[in-house]
Length: 145
Image (cartoon, rainbow, N blue to C red; front, side, top):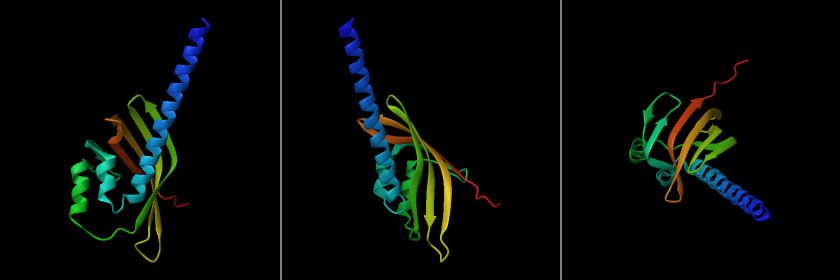
């Protein structure tokens, strides 16, 4: 009986350690992605799964190919930086849900603007790497009181 209890405790400790490692990997992946999201196509290639379903804050739905095409077309330089706040990571085996508040600081004009969004991403661990397979972004209205 004692051996069974010790084995159970060791298994629980190993599972908790694995969960902690996965949480750290996901948080690191998210932060690296946000640091380069505005102008680095390589972070998008790494972050998004090929079968991504992305629903933007404007109600548009598209996939990874459309995101990458946006970089190929060039466009104006981006003057927005992004960061995640209030990160909540929930693990379900090789699937994870990551919810957070995205803060975007737009410095493209003389008067900087900060926009906030609720973001929820579903990640799947494939071949040892976490990738986002679904994403939902919702703009948080500016309080006008």
